[in-house]
Image (tube, one colour):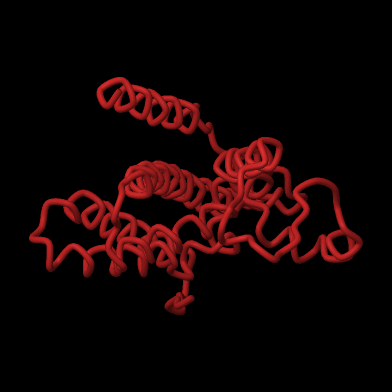
Length: 218
């Protein structure tokens, strides 16, 4: 991942918002531009999503982010600056949450299409790998789908000759809780935001569209 070096938190937040706005533009127009340009739009969108500025280290919150005025050495000017920065950060993080959910909506629509071209397939793959960590609801739905496929004895071609385990913690996972915490978006990001039920609505809408298509075809 690539990231610029910032002198202040204000500079970082400004840059994050600029990248979010750029990502929104690419997301809105990638399917409206001429076909030869579509792959380039998706490449650029992927680069924006995978920017280092959107790592949990920069996007997440610490417990002391909510402790305004609780310091023993209270400084009104510093507290005011802290509140101002927190308001700006909340605005940026909420914008990022909405943006990343909209990208997920577009990706699920793409993944549901037959005959994706190479660049679209690469974009879908990269985003899903990122969303596995950044969108906890997506990870839960994905794992549940895999478990349902396993229970229904559905053969997944890509997993031939491999062994996997979806339940329980291995010893290695227990030993690497510090590493795992680096990807814990639920604890350090979403619990500080008012997360809507957008994910559930999105999956319900996609399921409804698939059922409608089956009705039309059959």
